[in-house]
Image 1 (tube, rainbow over the protein chains, first blue to last red):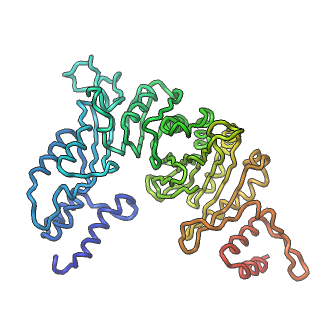
Image 2: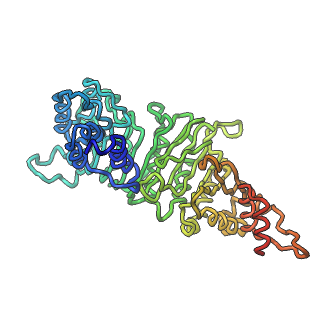
Image 3: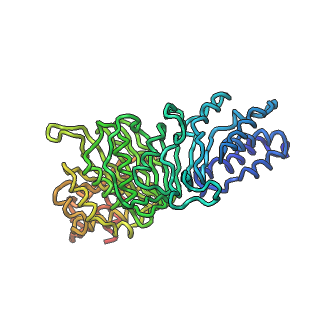
Length: 303
Length: 182
């Protein structure tokens, strides 16, 4: 097979089935990891080419998964001509679902750097889906969570010493879905708790205290640097969630760019008025003078 | 301008699925307005937006929100045309009818803060918008042309079509074609 198919053609084919559909599924079918793994068994050349795509993006569901990944990296034997795991892994996605346990996300960067893995912070993704903090008063032997206290975590550093700096939370991408918060402030606290966030996504979130928008708190520290975006989809109350988006923006901009509270409300009302029935996703972004704002679709807004 | 806040609307989670966006320009304080404020609101509509949906937008609510700002910002409503897409011209033609007949954005027009324009892409780069046809240009353009002994009157959409062709470099050909069709 290898002798009959020029290597560059195989490279193009494997790229077409792994890279582009990630960004645009309309461009083709994306191969699963299992399928890429099967391709890698064909011959040494195919293995060499597939290995990168097999490990380029790694999904970790728990601390045990992360430890397994680290063990795999540590145990890997170098094979001539085959890229090492450290070279292959470009993106780590941590998916947390269920009960919120002892936090460990702050150790990711430390462990990776110890293995000479230089993963860009924008390629470390934290996804929190249907997660809740178990009630300390409830029966620990019960397998069912107490629905009354089924609230999303308000901080990643719950149970950690206060001396742990926020800068240890190294991810730039945060995805939130199917989460229940008591108040809007709880969601904002969770987001503000993560110092390096650049891309924030949320869908299917709810607030028990209803559509109550707290007054904005101006934060001079950890202000948006320029290209960050906030994306929402699958909303339940778009008018309310739009206000929350703008509230978050109001709290993230530098103090010299803060307009009046009335202006923030007006902006959210303009944005709401422009929502089409067919709109399924909204991206809010901010750019400074001379910077370009690059929303998800790649359209550059110019001054 | 010290910063701009933008909202993009997408019909799916795909990169190419943005139908329109709005951008708010935040400017530095001035003597008259001692704190940062919004100086301009830019709304850009792409050909992929459904004209029918746009017509049903709560334009009054949009006006209320913009006019509640102090100072009242300038508003630009731009329809973007890209090569290989259709729909943008239809959206602009609807605006050519709806705005002057005061069906939408009446208060903004009266205050003179509204600028409606059609953006054409650069033929070479095909993504940079380099030519614009404004509604003001279309409406101000003389609409009577001498053709033999008669003087046919062009409607605003016809003038717009003519100007689009002119901006694209088809001046004589398109004009003759249009007059022949009358």
